[in-house]
Image (cartoon, rainbow, N blue to C red; front, side, top):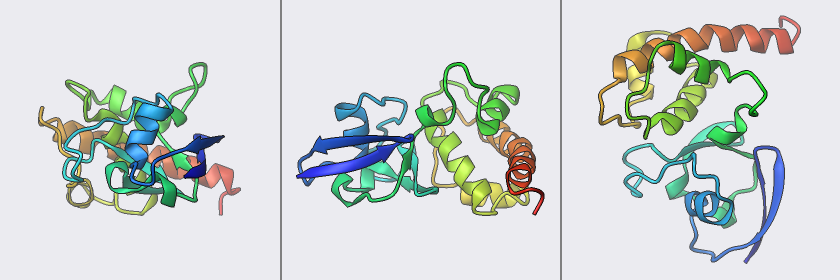
Length: 163
């Protein structure tokens, strides 16, 4: 089946098997390996990406059904650009250990903030509960999300003219 996917602002015309997941298309067809393949059963969150600004588990989404823009960890900032506030907060708070879950954690954390679920540490833990970290960096991840939430809010206000 031929599909047109917009990923990180770039259109990709691909011929895919209708059974291919978005995760497999990202990794195998497009070489975007920042999105990790963890459990491949939607239980670990390592494959989290944003579709139309909403976080999704890319191992659960058929590529042929995607009709909104996909943002992966590679699409958050260019090599010459400053890091996305969430990436910077993860760095500043040392919110990763082995780093395997980090891309999924960051993408889910952005979704958590954009959905308005970063009001307290308990709320963040609840809305990040679908992303597992085997190294148990959870306290630092919550701290990073709290730091980035205020930066993302300030940036959103700058973009909308303070409204």
